[in-house]
Image: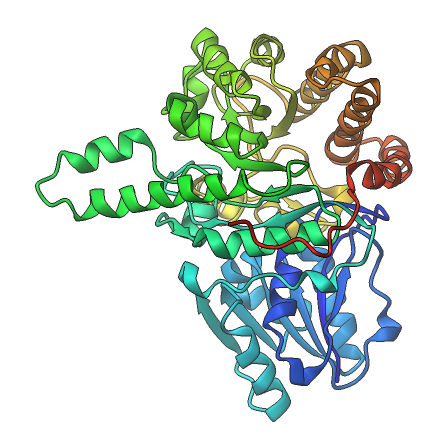
Length: 501
């Protein structure tokens, strides 16, 4: 009996940017008695169904974007006599859907770290339940990834998780509703052990794949300190102290290691934290800017962010510490106007963000936006290919709309075209070359240009464009560009590397 762990994708690029961490966590959680689990990441290559035999266990992790492909795999694997198990965020939200459409024998909701061995055991014994509740595992029970299962030379960046959960409540995000608002912070030694293992294998670049790397703000501490009962303050202070301990430990790792994470804008108000990030060689951070207008920030329940010139100045605080910003912007908010697109493009230049992504507002399950949208359309919901748009992930990808909710002043196609235009403007070669001055050598600048173009190909042309020819060309270009970048990011293996003192 073989345990297969599958990360579904309709597009395969030959190589991957960041290791899909959950595959290797569940690989580590698979009891050794069942042999070496077979890892299949379809962003590299599609699953070969001939490798699935009767009696095998096929674990499929899905988010909303790849759920349809996951269901295709589940049905096919079940037809071959395998036991099919679904997990992941989308299966947590819609467990019955995996049974109805994906051929699931069972579904795991929540974290899989602890419950996965139980599921395998029950499958082998023939006592499988319809559903398992993995819950929210505390940080001291997080399973470290099994990196020996990695296929060599296929990923640019490794990934390690240091915290799950986010205390914010952004309307477009499901993390705080699925992973909770209580940060579950790993002890720093457990994180460093994984990082040492990755560097032994040759990974110099690692994503700290966290929901929010800045889980406690100065404002959080200030508000907690005002209370007579200091228990909340003490808990938050302990989390903050652990973050500084982690960053001090990161600084002791080999000097050629570089880290990237995801963080909220409020970190820019905390010079001590930014300085620690700089010493830890955290050289990049995805910052959720979302909107450049006060009205847009209110739309997404993110009015703790700034707007306009104040926003640009705040973003530059990251750059002053050598932390490059990947700015994330959302278009199609109710308050957006045609002028918002030009204002956003100008702000991205003014703030000197190193990379940027411009996404169209999509109501994802588990978010407040989705809940509000689903209620608003009720029985008048539009259907495409017989499927209601409130289940848009089940619509064949080439038929899915780009914008789902009617906009007060713009058509869906106008929002799409204007969004594509901002991508085109920001990633125009002269501007990319200008931003490439953030690195020193010509080799590094050329690599920066390739990375910028790769990012644009993967996230704009293959996602926003409605032109299938353009999308197919972008897919081919991505495959060609990605392979040499893997070698650029890799370092010589350091098999003798030990834990820092």
